Image (cartoon, rainbow, N blue to C red; front, top):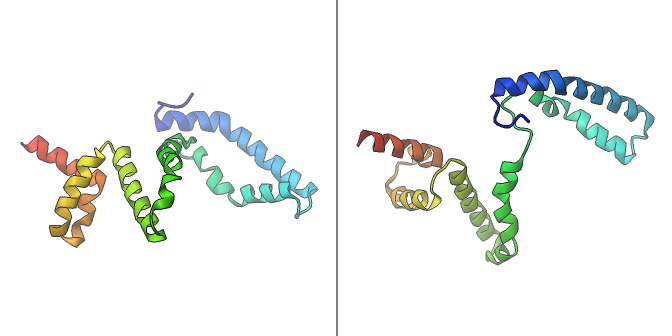
Length: 153
């Protein structure tokens, strides 16, 4: 299990255990592709992966890359659960606005920011906030600013 390990530790294990398996997989896929018609669905799947091989194997050279998308799936669970309710957004534009707000709320959660506190503060400050400093209001910057103000007090 590599969860909880440092990126350097994960990278060492990946290079030792995963790299040989991935190298064998590439050889096997290239051999199989020569045996199949280009119209064959399996050949198309093999080509799809081989065309993205550099991206697929990036995890072998970077221990920071997470091989699980569980965090993303957990974040999207609320979207799946609420999907039926959101058919009443009123319009495509309403749906787009709802998606933007949901993205901001999930970004707050991912950065350990209370979404309600963030929204209340940002919506109150936004009318008078300089447009060229809107990045200050992003959840991760907002949190850092609040923490430095709390430390200074």
